[in-house]
Length: 124
Image (cartoon, rainbow, N blue to C red; front, side):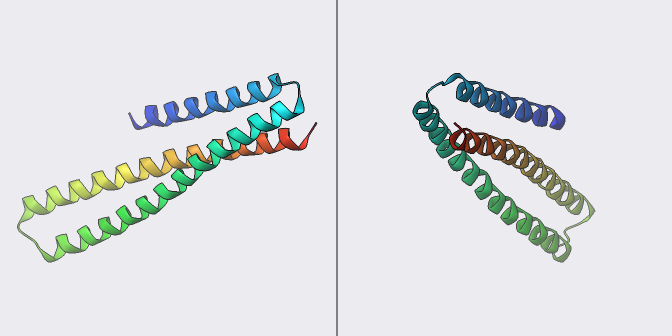
């Protein structure tokens, strides 16, 4: 299921990149192309800022994972409780890692979109 999530993220970002490329190449007049590229740059910049902010969130979750592991060692209620806590912490770590990978995929394609827009603004 995790691989399917990565594939969906990759395909949706690739479709967005293809739409940007096609729309920028469709515009024949430079002012229209530059305005469209600028609007796409603004959108990509906002989306990139959101993705970078999510890394801060994932960093906080990682700190909480470490804290939960430390507290699980201190408060040992029994073998069943320790096993369930380890399972919960492991699940959270897996979800955090998946979210980070999806954010990396987003940032890769947003960087490509930004490079494409800058190239279309600079060239005539």
